[in-house]
Image 1 (tube, rainbow, N blue to C red):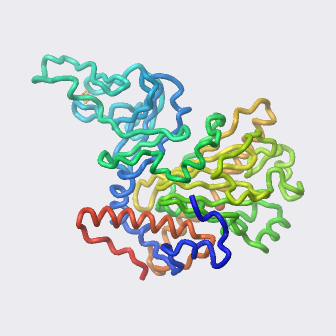
Image 2 (spheres, rainbow, N blue to C red; image 1 turned 90 degrees about the vertical axis):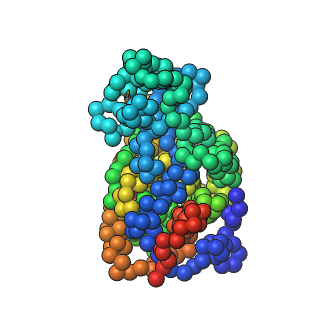
Image 3 (cartoon, protein in one colour; image 1 turned 90 degrees about the horizontal axis):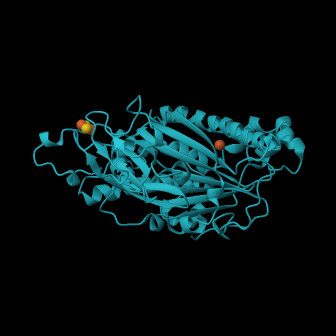
Length: 428
Ligand code: FES
Ligand SMILES: [Fe+2]
């Protein structure tokens, strides 16, 4: 992992010459053709985070994920040897979705000893082996061992479960996550078992919401009402500058200052935050986590507050100084819609005040995320007008340049491998 120090000369962006500094096109976020290519070139070719190991507490625990972008649904399960496995959620008999409850397109979770198909009762072990066929002798030379569930590559990093639909690729998850993954891996994610989850259907391209969390340029303006009026005026006066940006292959990070948990002056924050000793930056009296891994606060700044780690294509992990973390995932459902998931992870509260402090952080997060999400449809609908086709990005928006370039590069590589004519998404 390189490039953590502010260059002596020039800017963050100029530190990455391959990104350029010219205005950019957003055609990759408004072209249905580009999205169709992203599904195969990105969502069926990279490691995708589908959950955490805490969601599979015991043998037989399972959950399903509807991965529209990757054109499938998967079952994630802990088998009898306690391995985490993934399978396409399809019965080998006549293709019924194997695991679902009342509504076939809804994700489910539970625990079982085997999977039984609702249609004709075929049964599969937790390792995918087909063990029972109703009226087996009615079939023609059927050998059950030829019909296991179709497995999906599945690996775990730091308790995060990932799947990969590219059976030809041999890159391990660890290698894929690169130096950034390596340098973050020792963070004590396993301690944070108190989880609050949000999910939203958003009317924008998936990359636009990542953009909203990859820069803080908007924060003093879009989130102005979250601070007291005085504080907000001050913030707008000096704007925002991050502590560090890092790019590592397709992945990236931005490190930001804090100072809000606790604030140096309590009059900076709202009365409820003073009472509950909590806010957007988390509970003020969080756990002591000891020494943090090298990816965290890379500039070693004393006023550090939070780091946002982005693992391409759609996982963000935010580590906060007061001792908690957040994840965001963005699951496209069309070129201009996606499902956003925001999960907050705390150490289990030991008393009512700790619980309330965590809940205030969770509801404050929701308010911020709604403010961030609110601009997305407004942006999507207008960039689709193509009334403007090239947009100037500033130095604080360096990770946006990188994200959109990375997505375009994956698509271009995929098309080149197939000898296809590239879709034209150049800035005009
Ligand atoms: S489709 Fe599953 S048993 Fe027939
Ligand atoms: Fe924001």
